[in-house]
Image (cartoon, rainbow, N blue to C red):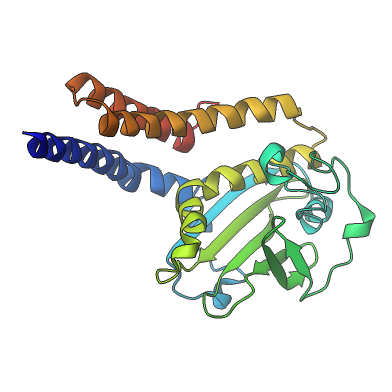
Length: 267
């Protein structure tokens, strides 16, 4: 009897995860890979594509900014941990930064003179490098190893004299034979767009003369974390507590809430 109960519980958990992941793959993943981008932008070749051919993960995101490329460029160029920050979820991205928790709210002249090959600190533990710099047009970050080539492009495309499209493209190769990279792979697959859309919005706000309060950022971040933890906790309940239809349906609802909040934001 105990073996049968364990098997039923395992199948229930597997079925729940399979349903939620199917919804992610069929609906949410397409949304997160192309957040804000048009079909033409997604298909258009961009600088940096040649540095990471045939990636496992390819995402193009974009936003329209009321400003010229010249006005936007300094905000992009100075990004980095311990520099201007990322204009996103400061409570996470700037934690422990020697410059403080808040991303810059002005252009910082001391971070406007980088050259190809200079480091781009991503966190206290990770860094990339400037692979290419074309002022007012694009900059490209890349990883430190050629074994797993990757490129991260920020490009500016003027629409008219006063409006510009800021387009981000990431080309990433998963490290299938490196279990130590699992956390990074999971973040890239499921949460990369959460960070990038916030960065794009943060750049837009600063160029257009707005800044978001830290309290608002933290509240939004808390909702994102709570929705993910809610889904994970229902999975834990299915594993640790007696299996019931009510608990299984609660898990399905929690998974749907997670997908909606992360991939079709209601914030």
